[in-house]
Length: 147
Image 1: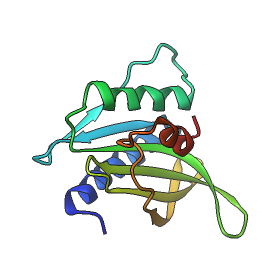
Image 2: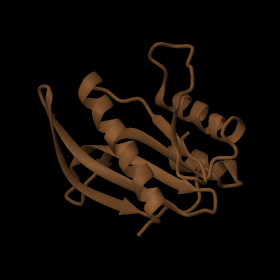
Image 3: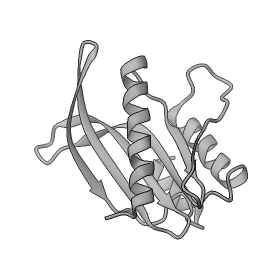
């Protein structure tokens, strides 16, 4: 299990992602940082396009983590993805990666289904990907985020 502060960061990121999804019916990647005292700050990268590519938003957020919030103790990055279930069916999922500077990281997937303006959320799964955002090798981030 992740440390309590990472659980709080993940919950905050999920709450924000669910609210954005319900409000806009779409979700661009979004992020938060947490300092050593546990304070959570939402971060955003100003994009040139009104409808930027997901990959460009992720690159912009990773750039912010490295250059503007380089002293953050932990980060959260949320995004909307399609995952393949064990039965081969593709499903929408809200995913949140939380990572501490020390390397502790967890990625949560919350599957959902949209019915009109209503959302039904399903099971939550978790994986332990290892360092991604704070990895020293850029190719790790590129593979993880498919950049």
